[in-house]
Amino acid sequence: MEEVRSSNNVVYRCTYHVVWCPKYRRNVITGDVDARLKQIIRDVCAERDAPIVELETMPDHVHLLVCCDPQFGIHRLVKQIKGRSSRLLRQEFPNLRRRLPTLWTNSYFVATVGGPTLEVVKRYVENQRNV
Image (cartoon, rainbow, N blue to C red; front, side):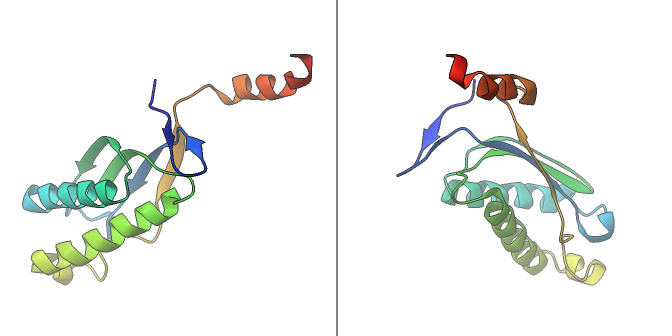
């Protein structure tokens, strides 16, 4: 079971599966770019107190399983990861600037994971008055 976390006024257990791709789904996440990207993602997540459950890259997309404070928001975390990684990787690897107008697409996929199924939670809420 995942760890229950808390901040000043919220207790939460929010784990997200996030997937995003380079512009035009180009195969650019390889070799040194891959290693540096993973380090940048780890750095941003550590700064935002967002523990990484799992991180894996493919040449044309990134999978991140991460816990994130719902008050900070997964959208802000992804925006910071994509923004910093795009800026740093394009500075450090000039060939990325030549191949792509921007490193990442504007979109990403996100889904919550873990915990009980929707049906179990629905029954729990429906039966609150009967408890």
